[in-house]
Image (cartoon, rainbow, N blue to C red; front, side):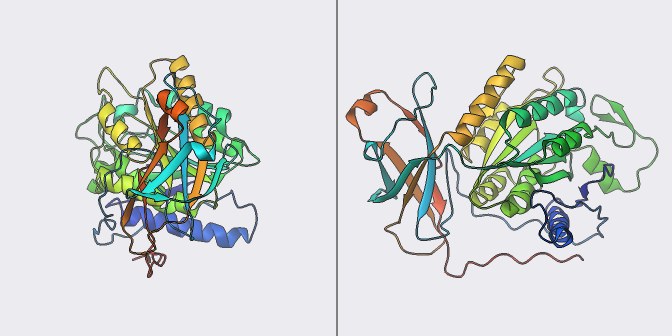
Length: 383
């Protein structure tokens, strides 16, 4: 893929290389800015040597089906949730005495209960630029612009633009500058691999510089892109923000080295929701709705499959409500073991009148407890 004055993360095996490129870019940006505006990330092109093909460390596989898992960072566990009625209208009138929280089936004492509608957002917009999106890339770019313009508050929120084929490109680091984000989106292009004749077909032609590069340019690595974004980009975002990935793709992954569940677990550890907008060439390739529903529900997000501009605007409005109109529950777990285990969390409506309304609560079903020996992973070194 071309260098568009961005951090081009050249991945031969899409795991260690992605992590190295993003980590190195962010480290240099932090030093160069010397305390300047935190939202802007310096971007430097790196051509990495060929390291040994070591995949990223695999996460413990815990299948997640609903909304809000957090990590224990202090003595309090924070759980966010939304409530909606049968008409999918958000309910904003719940009180502390209306709900109860159970961890692994054990009732917990609620320390804090409050609406949390004004929390800053840290968003990553992931745009699929693979061959299957050649015809619909303009639609993806328009959707990304529309979402940012409708959701982003420049004085509070930040967003980044990431594109992917079989490799990942950081087009714009986290920033609240909507102008920079628009320019990054405008610069996104479909770059065909050598020998590409259209319709996803690659034939013989001028030999590419690298057979690996040819393979990556003609492939799609959705799960690797989510893993890298969660591991390096959103984990580096500001504290006390709602983190989310907005994924614009048809859901057809062809080359990822990490599995879908590993991408889900990495997003969970970054406390990031995934929202998918299923956009693609329905006539030639189709859209894998099942895969997009699975990865979004596993992180507490949702998948949308708009057929027109009205559907798209409704999806954006609901995502915005999901991210902003949330309740916060904080409690001190009765299980004091710091063993890294997965703790199942259940939130129940106990108010009899509200129970009859069959409200739907959206939250992730647990969290990963912190371990006594938990330490940040060392930054990988260049080979």
